[in-house]
Length: 472
Image (cartoon, rainbow, N blue to C red; front, side, top):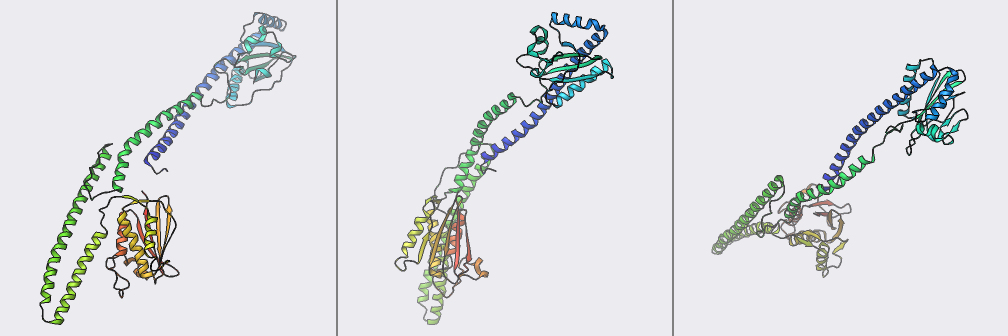
């Protein structure tokens, strides 16, 4: 199935139209064929009735008068049948057997036997005009004078099959009756779907599809704008609300999105004010407490109080740093991740040229530049700090970008892999650097871009961190 709404609707419309046309065409063709067969049977029944009447007429004549009547018929012309009396039954190559041919021949035989009796020696078949043979000498049709046979046996340019009826009227005497099938029932083949029907379907699709594609594009344009606004959600300024266009459902979704963005903006503004107030309100009493602690004469008590104040101040700074590092107040731009990572690698060249390496290439990614820089910086710093080296590998795929960061440290116990993203959780408690926030902040930034951060231990030792960023 296509991924776009336009492609899916057009495909489903094509399938629906194809099914509808197949069903309607099958019903139409069945009705058309039934009508054609009914008309064909009625026409051949009339021919059979005329042939039976002619045979009865010749049977009623004395034998010596039959040839005289034949000569008069040929001189007059314009008869429905070509009639002759032959000394034998003439064998000719019949037209190929079809369902219609068998149906018509059964009808002719039934009429003739009903009128002439079941005991008559009868032979009925259809012959193409080119294979038709006439008289005892078995002459082709073109060898006879036009006044003799061409009026009854030709219907140019159609050249329909000729119904040939041969009836034994006496010993060594066969009555030969031949008549071309009259228009419009001139074919014994199964009727195919007329070209007009196929042309109608093609014209209908060629008109309907462009109109349908234009209509869907017009209806989905507000959805594309909504998707772009959601992807590039900006809360650091006051952008105008999206215009409410399209169908009633799309207008309702757009209105809900505008309301959601407004509430988010209000929430973030309130949060900023709250943390500024907390920071200001906490710093003042902490400063006063420090001044009062300096006035305490008891040295052990003063040291314990100073340690508690340092811990309290550290907790406040960490909380504010956590909020600041995962802040989403940034516009979405094109970011060259490869250049960003290679710049980080150059920063470590002074200490060790091979401490940070970058492999692979990727196209620019649309995201928040500073947030992505903090995310990648935390991953590289974490690998260098705890794994001594950071090997970065880029994989650019059609729908996503994958960044692998590997180190050569001790790795993380399997039962603690899920906890390394928790705030303030540090595996190496003996090391005083860091506050246990780096990986958690990196994962939050990845998720804010619709991606994910995964960790696993390398078989040869060390930690393997995979950052997956989805392209929109």
